[in-house]
Amino acid sequence: MKKKMPALVPAEDTTVDLLVVGSGTGMAAALAAHERGLSTLVVEKTGYVGGSTARSGGAFWIPGNAALPDRSVADAGTYLNAVIGDSAPAERGRAYLEHGAAAVDMLRRTTPMRFFWAKGYSDYHPEEPGGRAEGRTCECRPFNASVLGDERPRLRPGVMEAPVPMPVTGADYKWMNLVARKPLKALPRIFARAALGIGGMLIGRDYLAGGQALAAGMFAGVLRAGIPVWTETALVRLLRDGDRVTGAVLRQGDREVTVQARRGVVLATGGFDHDVEARHKFQSPRLGEYSLGAEGNTGDGILAGQELGAGTALLDQAWWFPAFAPVPGGAPAVMLAERSLPGSFIVDQTGKRFINEATDYMSFGQEILARDRAGTPVEEMWLVFDQRYRDSYILAGRCFPRQPLPESWYRAGIAHKSDDLGALARAIGVPADSFQDTFQQFNTLATAGRDTAFGRGDSAYDRYYGDPTIAPNPNLAPLRRAPYYAVKVVLSDLGTCGGLVADEHARVLREDGTVVEGLYAIGNTAANAFGASYPGAGATIGQGVVYGYIAALHAAGASS
Image (cartoon, rainbow, N blue to C red; front, side, top):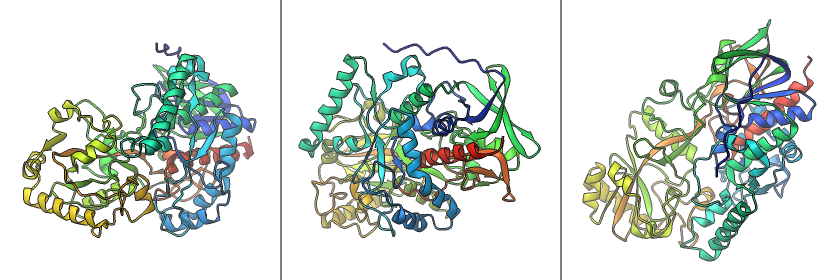
């Protein structure tokens, strides 16, 4: 039986050293500040704690941290220089690498979490100088959320809920997805995670993985430290004394309260994921309402900073993430390995391929927006696959091998199936001749094992989510077994990543480059420290955690 949501902690006029607005990676800033002796308050707009972090895969890309076998960050610096270029200030990347390991050490000291290296989860651009095919991504080990006690219901739910208690890490998912192809590798992981989840439940433990584990772990640290958390409490405006930010006016229900902050305010309110008007203005008028970010992310922190003259950058960018189209009234379904697996390809409304389907998800979205700006938009996308593919892999985290697709998908028109390619093309509204030509061309390339059209499988990143039983290219196989399927794909995202301009100390900068004293921005409230790039899995959480730590350190050293 689910526990009842605990009573709301009433907001009141108060004074603290550091006010943190937002409870995703903002909790890392609060933990670091508390460890430095600062009185800290976390406020959260929604009723849940965890932000988009709790809805994510929970990985973090922080080179040199103690969970990695190599603590050196020299080649990581080379890599960041290569992938970021001039799209973000170099000092932001340097500060990230300088403080990354210490930020993770801080989480190890202040929370019950323990971390592991997701060996083999390649950097997203491993062929660039300093890139690593073995990757630098880490995750939280399955975490017992029962330590949250009565506060457990306040943890934000995840995107995918398992039908049975089963804490599946990203590293687990890679192999579980291949259960029909590599059972000796997958089944022990499945049994181990099921035993941990179900066995834990029988003795009163609630094991979580991924973003749920990371958010729960930070929340547990916050509770253990006695840091107050006010939920359902929104930012109204920032307070100033001269040019310095000194606190904020907050609203909880129909009441407004004032919080004075001696050392400053950390804006960790996320991006503007669910401000559709702003997204159409800064990104593309074609975008649907498909963001996977937390629903409270409507740009509050960014707007509050702009009211004080703060500069903004990279508002056209997001952590793009292709997803399966939702049924009416539903949400998009996460699409992780499906684009990389052999026996499938993606077409647009012309019936043609337009991209390396297995590329990292941010680059995938950037290509779509680039086509939009060039006047050749991708109006629709369909993942096409055959029966061998359907019998071999998990789809959308819910359709197991050999399991039929949900009837609701067919009724909604987001899935179609046919033995005849022409009929399938007509069903999805693409030219039959073009579609059949694409089908034959793809099969020819797949049979040869080399995608000379788009390079699918050339990168170590592509191959991470491939099928190692398929040679010579784990990302390519011809479609030969009817019936053939098409499932609609939409461009979703994990949140926007353009926002307030911040420096290497996480301090917000005005449009003229001067510092807004007492104001910090981290995570997706700040313009991406990696510019227009995504270095590796968990870079978004990584920069939230690291810059939360940096902001706390700076605030702790600031004059009162």
